[in-house]
Image 1 (cartoon, rainbow, N blue to C red):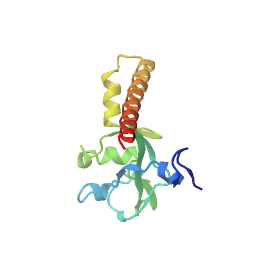
Image 2 (image 1 turned 135 degrees about the horizontal axis):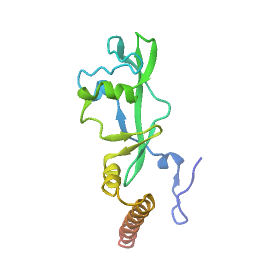
Image 3 (image 1 turned 90 degrees about the vertical axis):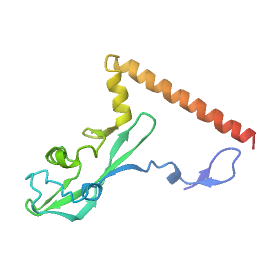
Length: 159
C-alpha cells in the first residue's frame, strides 16, 4: 500500500520507508573471535553448535537518547540439552562475561535494551525525579526537531 508523501510531493512512498531497521545485532560467535556461547540451561559450551543458529522472532527494542531501534540476536542449539537458547540470555551473558567483556555496551532488560548514551544520561541525573528526567529528554527531542526542521526548510528555500 502506498500513499502520497505530502500535499506538495507527487512521489509515492511505502510504509517500509518508516520501518525501524536493526541498529545492533548480537551474534557472539561472529562478533567475538572463537567465541562459543554457553548454554543458558546447562551452562556448558561442550555441545553448542555455532553453525546451527536462527534469528529470534522478536528483537528487543533498543531505546536511545536520540533514536530507537532494535537489538536483534540469535538462538543457538545445544546438543547436550537438545534445545535452543538466546545469545542474549542473562545466564549466557553472565557465564561468558570474561570472554565478551567490553563487547556489549547496552543495559539489557526483560523486553527492551537501553543504549550507553541513554543509560549514562539517566545515571548522571539519578538524583532527579523520573518526571524531570522525562521532561529534559522531551525538551532535547523538541529542540533537535526544531533545529532539523529549520535546517531542512532553509535547504528547501535555497533550492
